[in-house]
Image (tube, rainbow, N blue to C red):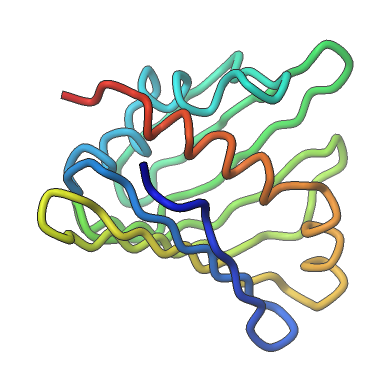
Length: 156
């Protein structure tokens, strides 16, 4: 079982999240880009489930992911700026909590480690306050819960 995610704050505006998965890079990529797979690993274990997921996995394509619990719903939308399957995703993302956050530039790198994958997610926020507010949401805990679900997902 992979170790939990680690994170590092860089400067005033960046957050870098690192995580390993016991699955080949191509399968971890698919889990991030295919709506049916994404809905499985981003749902459950923390009261939130993905209730809607639309992904146009092309450069310039958009995505919309709606997370819902018994008493709260938030939506993540974005545009894929660059895609290099299965190595790199560059996207611009906005969260609706319910008001929209400033755009967040997200780069996700997938690197093969034998039959496993090392993933690095770099989020660049517009300013220190936006990053601080994002960190205060408990987002990192939710990410790790989802990543544990991804660990358990049968991707073959």
